[in-house]
Image (tube, rainbow, N blue to C red):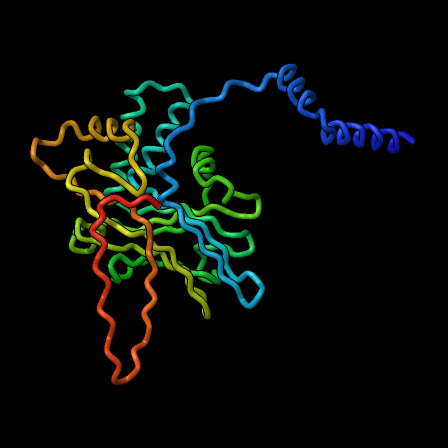
Length: 278
């Protein structure tokens, strides 16, 4: 009897919520229950550095991965949210951000989401990862499960779920000759996921910027981020060039085989646009 009464009460609330006048009920709830103050939204520059791939074996899912490249812009977005949540000063944020950007000089880092049934980073893992920059392959220095900061969970958005585990994946940022893997001439970076019989990949197109204060990514770079970049590199000598990379939309080109004796089609003219909105 008690269960039946509870069911009737729940049904009543559902009917009220779906009734034509439910807007008044919602307004009443907002008025009576403190909703807290909404903070102004932060720039979503980190969105350009997130990639996803889902692979199938006929109709069954064989692999499902999401990856976030911790580029300079991603670090800046994280620092903004991280320090704002803690009420830190602008000076504290800049000190914190300097350490984050310094780490990018030593490693190329990704956060990767994988289903719990597909663990990564173990010798017997079904899927292994490696990185290629302009067709040169690099093995990860470290692949381990991690607990994401709330800020990174926000940046991942709806890609985060309770069915996925987060991993930090690090690659060396320099070659054995101590040269940067991503240089001012690098064009493409690809994170590969490979099993015994299948492969998936995530592509980031790279583009060099003349100076960090002129750095722009697909879409537009907020004025706040430009100001922060100027402050971070204020101690760089005048005229010095700071190498950096930004992301532009990935374009997949499919080549068409040419029949024997047929004339080849001329190649399309290269796109010289310096700023492309996705």
